[in-house]
Image (cartoon, rainbow, N blue to C red; front, side, top):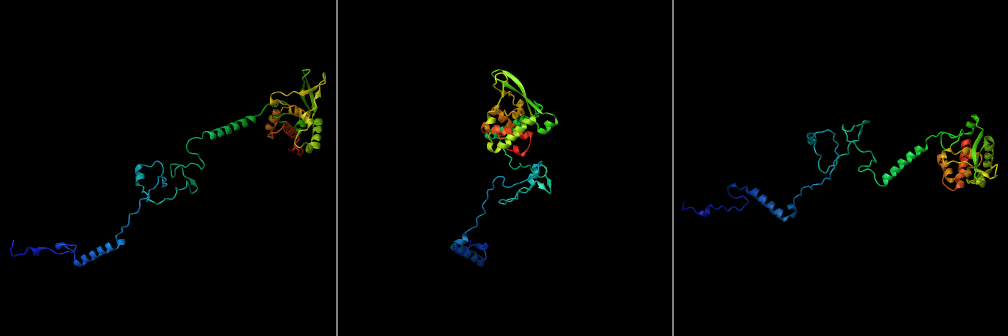
Length: 301
């Protein structure tokens, strides 16, 4: 060490940002220093733009439609769409007038209104079961029967019309009556043309007066007197409703001897209104049977 040299001569008094021989150009250092001072004085210069927020994409946000039987490697090669961009809906299964088969170009989608999940239960199940049972009962009611009389048809509570009866020479309608005091049963017969003519004239003269209600002559019919005790003989009406002799009761104007349940049975089998009092249902039965014999305007309800 040279004693003549002063150690203070080797001290670098450069107060700029760069020190020593590796310092920057003074002009450049001065510009950087001034920029730093301006940033301290102006708070707006010190703000930094925050990165864009990360948007949370809910599950099944993208509606991808991939063909079936695709491998994992094929799915990995499909590029993912950018976040925050909604893709258009899946293409319609109908392209160019042709329906894409499942597994070829589209997935099977449920039909509109299809209920997914558990099968119906509770009130819905009972309602569906009642509909099914009602359909079965209706089919059973429409079954054909063996005609119990020559003027009856294969349908319950239905009779042949006048043209059929006249063409088949069915002019006499017979039936049985029973006397309760004497315990005797007799068979009587009515002339079809004569008895129906009397009934036709009565309805034609009293239809407006009746106002869809059976009058007393129908509600309390005049019975045939017994030959022994002179008491009224009621018609024989069995418990089997399919074997009721409707035409015989009509011509003898003895439908009033039927019970309300039997009259409602007729209205039910002929698709007529079957609710209300007995005089109302009795009137419908008279007019309904007459319309089966002779379909004319007079017998319209």
